Length: 412
Ligand code: SAJ
Image (cartoon, rainbow, N blue to C red; front, side, top):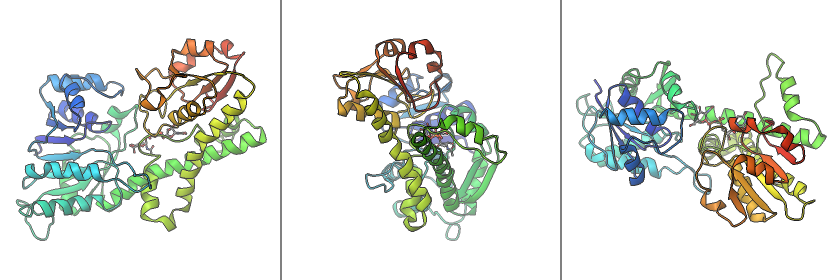
């Protein structure tokens, strides 16, 4: 029976997972390489914004079930929830997974379960098994050579939660679990059954890895279709949102929403892992990435055209996060658009992002200001809606009548 869990990486997945496990009664030890993150969590505070997460972290820490530090401890289960970004040449960067795996080596004991939750290229879970076999030859990682009492069990259980709904989805989503062999799958399944109410779907580690990459590629390809429609409709002078609304009345058509591009650490990243693994076979997936990555530059061009009529235009950029009602700026197309505008020094940029306290480093320029919504609208000549935050609904539409409005989300 699992009693103690060590969660490595206390980010958007690791921190909610560690807190949830603690609330469910496991003794949890969370590990992060950032001392600042560890200090904040030890005080019962969340370092990221996610609905209700702060309440949960506080309860978990105060109950004594969640402790955190920069070093792992011995446990029954090790959950790896570290980033898997891509390098500049779009190749996957497994250095965090490697580092986290190496950090648990001294603590691994026979019978332990190691679960990789990070979205990873096909074969990563087997590589973890290889690293463990190399560093800890005393422990077995396979069925054939060792009996249950001497080995560790290694599985992949890709996270599938949606930022903004993480706490509910952690419990309710169906989970795919794939071990490096069948005993590993079984051990991991028994663990997840203790706190997941969704279905547990068993497979092998390579299928679990590719299924996760495919889920996000599916969404990327479908968003690319919507974004391509927005380009076609702009070209033909047609309102793309009205057209999609009408087309979606067909019982078998369900087009997603165009926007300023695709952001986040998942959908804009994961398809590249498939392209890297099978370059000749991924023409559609590759093209979808290109279409979605084209969108921020296209929006900048449209803003530039509209700004030409002003001598020193004031441009309000509404929203910086990669999607609505969150504070996450990773891979955000809105940040790319603001950076581009700032570099072009077309005029003054007033950035409205209610979820952050200060602008990211790349936007700390003389002519860029983090501004309150009302003031930005009042002072601007051009209003660019980049993110459909709920709070932007309260914009007084009368104030927009005298402005040039570029709504990239069909929201206003
Ligand atoms: N977007 C559009 N149009 C749409 C939908 C989304 O332009 O119709 C944009 C968003 O604005 C954002 C990006 O796509 O920039 C991604 O947003 P998202 O809401 O589609 O997804 P994420 O990145 O927040 O979370 C995804 C989810 N995956 C799928 O829906 C298949 C989530 O379940 C995964 O757990 C997560 O990736 C992950 O961590 O992999």
